[in-house]
Length: 43
Image 1 (cartoon, rainbow, N blue to C red):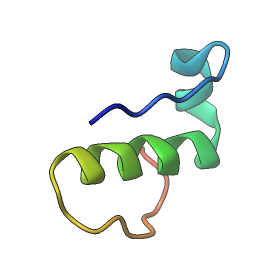
Image 2: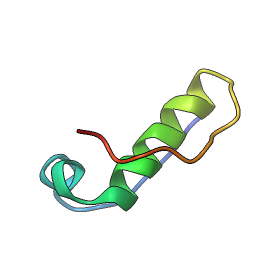
Image 3: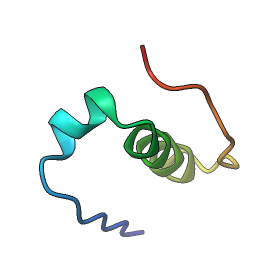
């Protein structure tokens, strides 16, 4: 399986952008073969 996400400066945006946080968690869920679900932002 290949998941390609194109976003400049992913690391810095992961700290402050709830959308980037959700996409990151969704990708991790897909790789773990569990259904992605909405979550609160990382803190």
